[in-house]
Image (cartoon, rainbow, N blue to C red):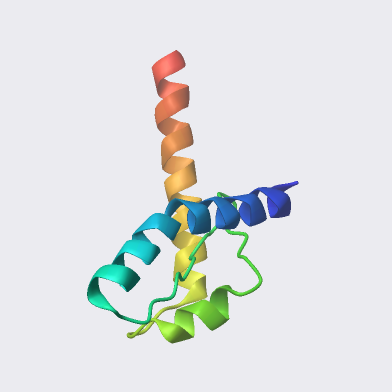
Length: 85
């Protein structure tokens, strides 16, 4: 189930930025590419994430992305549970 959500999110991100992609391509006559970086709340990664990260300049670690996703999810859960009690 979680894998499916990550794949759906990847598709939503591509659709969300499609208009910006077209506008940049037409306005500036540049070659563009939409690079999706999606991490699930439990640290699940999309299949092409490592390949997509290689295109982006700089150092990127999938381990740090997973750790950040898990820590942020737990932080949000703690806030929600404290508010309700």
